[in-house]
Each structure stands twice: as structure tokens, then as C-alpha cells.
Length: 175
Image 1 (tube, rainbow, N blue to C red):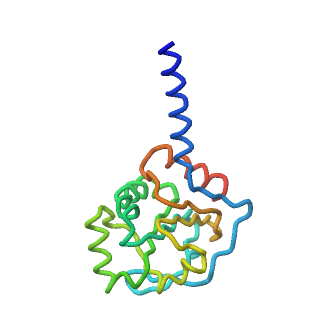
Image 2: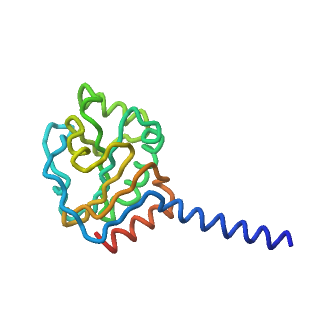
């Protein structure tokens, strides 16, 4: 009897873990055009989210005042390192008004485990507003054709193998 209860609890736990990895994910039936608004790279260059040909992009909208965002930065870096050779590009986008300059943002990212990550600022959160993003973290999934194919709302365990495999699956189906 105890073995049966343990088996049932284990099965329920595994099912819950797999579902938790996909919590907050919304994949669209039809890819969507992205707003034309641009974000600013650390060197001052302006780019739009559809400017990464041949890459499947995870554009992570985050804030320095968002505790879950900061907690996941090192996992995001690990995810990016594990997936970069497979055509997945991770970019971090935060509101421009949170930083006095790109050096301050780079120091912040380095301090919290996201050293070397590609980062951008969103002038007055205009792109986030155009996308209907008003909370952080929020990740926009962009296929290789520069179309939005879905979103992930909230934090994730980015360097968990189940999450990585799930993103690969999305990329294979919609990328």
C-alpha cells in the first residue's frame, strides 16, 4: 500500500514538474508582426526585434527592480551558453530610465551573474508598451523570420534541461 501511494505521488510530482516548466507559455497559432519600435544597444545603435536573421530570439524584458528577474539572471546566462551554438540568441531588454548609462547596466548584470550577456534598453518602455508588456520578467519568442511566435510570462528555471528541451521543441516547430 505504501509503495502504491509513493508511486502515485511520484507520478503526480513528475507531471506537475513538466507542467510547471510550461507554465506561463503562450504559443500563437499564427506568427505576429513585431512593432517597428527599436531598442538601444550598449554602443548606442538602434535595432528592432526582427533584426536578427537566422536566429531564434528570446527577448527577455526585465527590470532591475524585479526580484524574480534578478534571481534568474545567472540561469538565463547558463541557458544562453548552452543554446547559443544551436541558433538561439538571448537578449536582455530593460527600461532605459533605470540606468544612467550602459556601463552601469553592464556592472549590474556582471554583479548578478549575467556577465557577457547581450543587453539593450527600451526608451521609456515604449517597445514593451507596444507589445502589451507591463510586468517583468516577460520573454518574447521571435522566429528566424523576425515574427513573434509566443511569450513566456514570469520567471523560469532557464538552465533546467526540461525547459531547454521545451524551448528546442518550440524552435523546431515554429522557428
